[in-house]
Length: 539
Image (cartoon, rainbow, N blue to C red; front, side, top):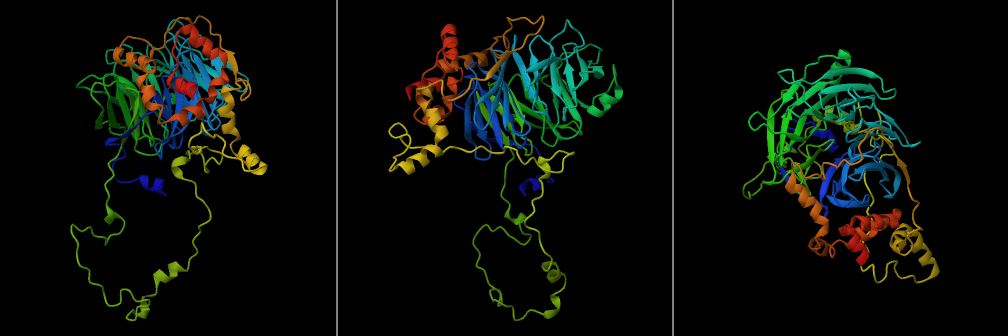
């Protein structure tokens, strides 16, 4: 019901800060699920923290990777997550169980992963210095997408809103539109500056509603196009952008851009500071600038799918931006008055009578006729905000929320509860079977879970010595040092461990997935244990 009231006459963009989400680890990337009920945050210690966005509490922690998580994407039904880390590994996760389904190892760092919007069996991967790759998860096969220029492999790619086409862009400003099923070239055009010079494509983002998409380029201009016009122009077309958005005063370069849930607004995060610029798409005017803490650098921005809420990441913390909610009780009833001070109320003569003796009979006309109509209170209408324009019903199998396991006091002393007799103990064992598996995983690493299948993806002519931009030192030197240094410090771990031991203990059970392999890698690289690892060792 509340979602139907969102289409208000007021503005639908955030105006002020509304708190932060501290993942304990340093957050690097975040993404909402399709309904905005869960927020997945990738951290620099390899964990994926899933927040219940309604309660603003941690619903689950998945120990996903050894190295920092650099990209995340939800499947359409919310049951799966695909993640990429800076050690060139792409993994698919079952959100409910926290288990890894599949793993793919690439020769170069991964810039972006994205599920097909309608088919979660296909995943689009953008490796560095390589053409984009489309993975088929069922048979672990991959297809390398065609590119415009084999010498220019700095390519970004994205599915369109329904996954019918894939849009790719290279460092020379050339956009290719490929048919997803056949990889055939359908349309193409070149993004040029005013002097006919080309500019590198940094990212391509599509709106959740409508046919619009934006292109973030190296010349610091965000161009908004209509996808229908692009397809009409065909190959080597010359479409004109609907809007050109930029910061004319400061010439700000943009780190991340995205549309609002309804596609009416565009937010862009500055690459120089923690500042969010919001434009109205239809007019192209700047409506709001949201300033975060001075001196912080922005890493990621995500707009809530159905509400005027933005999540941004800087200095390892997720900041939430929302509207200022002012209580206006007179909006609920026209004759409701707000009083500055107490007023003595004088009741009418018949105000609290069971039956009004003075009521005149002829008034029973339209109101009584409406009361006789039957009101349907059993059938559930689909929420329009959760349905696409070509759908009539909601997805009945969708995963909107995660069950949160109850916290057990003093788990060290009596982890399973006292068994008075055999019946109760058997019931207890069944009830917390999964929890018992996790807690006993440190004693028997081989028992709990099957090792996920790992597929090596071979790409021709791709250099193996590339370093992911998150780990590089050029540009944002200060923030990178902070990210790399966080796991090494012991102060933060000691400070946090007394308060949240169960989070780490319950969910670090995924560590034995790799077993000795992880320990071997950490020993070879000389890496210290991450915060969660240290705590699970202590426990």
